[in-house]
Amino acid sequence: MDSSPNAGLGSVVRELRSSGPLTRQELMGATGLTRPQVDQRLGQLRELNLLEEAAVAASTGGRRPRAVGLRPRTGYVLAVAMGVTGVTVGAVDLSGSIIDERSAAIDVSAGPHDALGLCVRLCQELTADVGGEPWAAGIAVPGPVDIGHGIVVSPPILPGWDQFPIRDWLAEKLHMATWLDNDANAIALGEYRYGAGRGHRNMVYVKLGSGIGSGIIMGGVLQRGDGGCAGDVGHLPVPGASAPCPCGNIGCLEAVAGGLALGRVATALAEDGRSPLLRTLTEDGAEADASALARAAERGDPAALETLRLAGSQIGDVLASVVSLLNPSQLVLGGGLSYSGDVLVSSIRKSLYARALPLASRDLLVRRAALGEAGGVLGTAELIVERLFSPGVLDQWVDDGTPQGRPELTRGGTTA
Image (cartoon, rainbow, N blue to C red; front, side, top):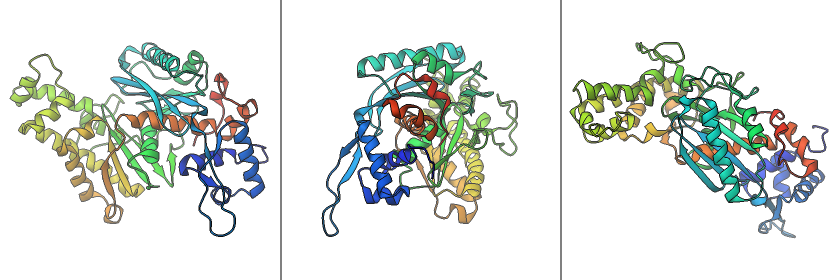
């Protein structure tokens, strides 16, 4: 057992957040702490104004045990969920409830200063409306993230962002501890805690958006791998594909079946006349993107339907390998493309079940994400709170009673 006076405090917080009000006996069983240790940790939480008495637990004989829970509105965090075309910032309390949020269109191709400057302004506006001082902030971005250094490394769909110090830049501008992670990781954690993944300790979340990525949860723990890029399925090869990918390789899944790639196909179908319907849908200046492709497919356009069937088959082929390798109990499909009608998802399922190992796919559930756009905000908030209560960070602020206004906390702690 860690000799730190705060040892086990993070575990108690984690159990109270994930399981709701618990008795001291239940906390002992969940954390492995002794009764005096549990009492000490609860005393610390009470001093931080984080503890409240809950409903009295049912008695099994003798005096009824008292349950305790977290006081969620003692603090809140700012969670920034960034995509290629839009960003949402949410103020989220310690129980995972969104207090308020702001959204805006964004152009990541303009570079990090403009995009992150917009994020800062949204955070400041949100803080002014919510009131009080946030405990910390976090941002999830669509690219390969080096967690230790707080940067993205050679991000294919974030031109000009390579090696930019996103984490430290935001921590300085916001004057609070700030952490960075990949968007698929964040959404995976959000779905695991609050959405489609509840009750599944082994799940894979796949984001089908402008790019394609995934977040992997095994044994209830988010898996980042050694360098932080675990789950980057968008850059696994598709057999027989030769399309160039911004990552420098050819035939990557993202290059043939991601939203940007499908948008290019839609443009070609409209321009060369193979899809008169797509041409009609874009005559008023609307973009021939993946969304237009989906609308055309819903109206029975043969070229659009075949394009989505092929994309679904290619995605399913790659995910069959992921399922055979990891053997999750559930595969959750999210991102804008997952809501582009049933053709794409049906093709993914058909190809996946046909190619995955029978034992791995026998009991596998494949379903759409449940949280929609809220998944990124809720998952990013989870990542922030996990870091705040990780040993290296907690030891730095708990004696002061609050982590507010402490950007130096950014470099402490461990990843979950």
